[in-house]
View (cartoon, rainbow, N blue to C red):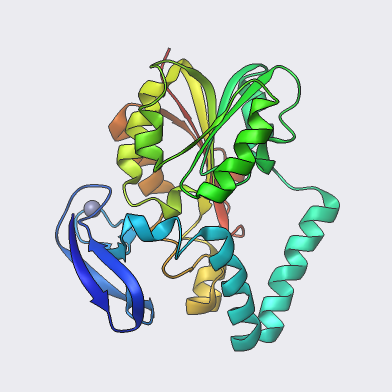
Length: 278
Ligand SMILES: [Zn+2]
């Protein structure tokens, strides 16, 4: 990775460039998706879709803090595409009313007690439904959110670490966790393979990781094009398909489970369960 100076359309942002996060390939063709100076490419060797120039890491915890940029993006979409953005928001409200699938539900299909880690834990609220038997841990890059999560996790036998996830994982003993959740996190991560590799060793043999990311093969992306809700510039830097998710995880040594309902093209997200072989 190399760092360069400011970009004209994002005057406060320093950027770093990177090769393909899946295969380290250096040859990619440019896609039509972009916003301002942020653009997407597809690797010519492995088909992975990614942003080759991303905000420098020290910008992510502050200038591009996800909770803030999510609110800003929602406001921007209301202006650019008011009807479609209202439908998107209504879908989220409807999901909240009638129940939604959560990664912790998937964890409980495999593990009923033990240490569970949330990567990109935010304020920790997504582990609130973990229930008895679980000690809660998290890693997040935002100091303010990590502090909030830490208070909550300490009341449930664990704690939160403020660090980039790769670095944060190395602070725990090997074989420490029974389960991990990566909910809407891996699409933000500059080095997704590196994080999954560190996580592999942080999980105990037989431990599992539940992943949810936007599905680049979602029909909505084909229908809505650049207005697809999965595109968030410059927050989302990786765009997975079921095939590229599987390859990245299997290259590291995970056993990958994706059921038919995990990769439906009618869903904006794809789900995967990664298991460190026992
Ligand atoms: Zn590649």
